Length: 216
Ligand SMILES: [Zn+2]
Image (tube, rainbow, N blue to C red; front, side, top):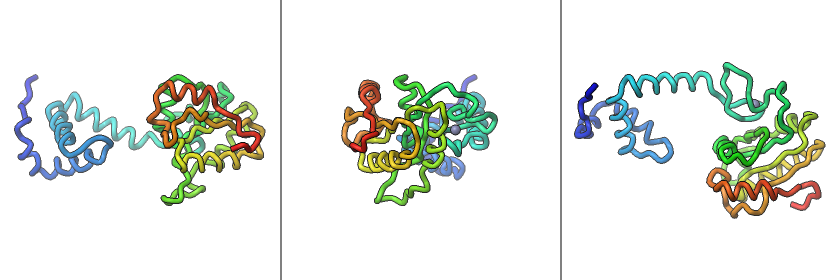
């Protein structure tokens, strides 16, 4: 089916309230400004049935079904149990603690680590209002106390906030029997997990160091 070419219609588009509204929303997404937002909207308008409708449905579905698990912080569908921390699935003996979901995805994509994840939902910082209570730490202690878990690997960023948070987690786990380790110094200072290449991540995991002796 041939579609009307709307590429010369940017000025006209700007006067439509509905499009202005969506442009403002899309411009808030990472890496997108008003210009690319308009390009996306044009593409959607030109592919109403192939793109716009399935996208609208898909967004509505994600909005109502997908949320963070209250125990491990990973994304889960309300249609099923959390695949990351389902108590009936004792397939791993390690938990990797990360700051956010993007970090989990980076580590998963690199295939370096086989185990459970625990997503804190941020870091401790003096410069923002993130409080200890905002981070999912007490449920981490509960998870670490399960018999099947041998090791908790702290994979927070090599930033001041990330390291402060690592300290706090290590402290919170002191009454458990698990081995607590932290990613190795291979991490560049200021390095955020999400932005590391697979090689750096691999050596950071492989050379992770135990925090048992209060050395750090
Ligand atoms: Zn979970």
